[in-house]
Image 1 (cartoon, helix red, strand yellow):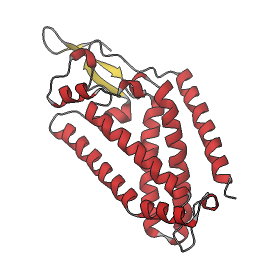
Image 2 (tube, helix red, strand yellow; image 1 turned 135 degrees about the horizontal axis):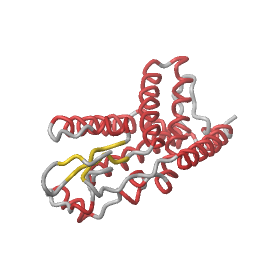
Image 3 (cartoon, rainbow, N blue to C red; image 1 turned 90 degrees about the vertical axis):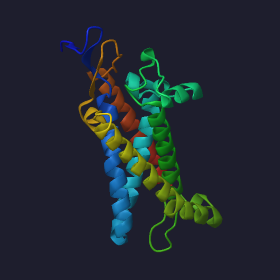
Length: 233
């Protein structure tokens, strides 16, 4: 689309930031987290769904780990692993234009992303060997001792879930701050994939070929996750 003039020296254009696989990962993860929490609170027969949502989270996390190396430019970990000095300059509002700190994940946003992915990974891992002492156990519980299972269960049901709630709440608060204060609609960008940015901002590759690659990676992750799950049969 044609550039839209802002002033005499700067113009903007619509740039693809979030490729389709990244967007689908994001919204599927949201659905799975909500489904996992709701099914756990309901309990009883709904715990079967809790396990299924947990398996889906495992598949999605494995996919995101791989996509962080081969995905679109702004989905790659290399684009949002920042040096401490860059983080400090960002907090002081001294980022350089050529760093494009506000295009993908900002330095503070990157910290939130990595923390959430790590916590979700730990939550899934603990769930694989947890025991609710009623009717539901993780599929890999037979591979660990009772003490290890008890420790994993305690984490899964207390610190693990509450830390995730906290990070999700902070994530939502940051989205609202950007929307209401900075007039930056992050949700819209994650839905459409595009942002209106100054000319020269690099775009993410999002083609039929990259989407086929993402599908192949997702299926491979599903196969590995299914194999892990089957170990407990």
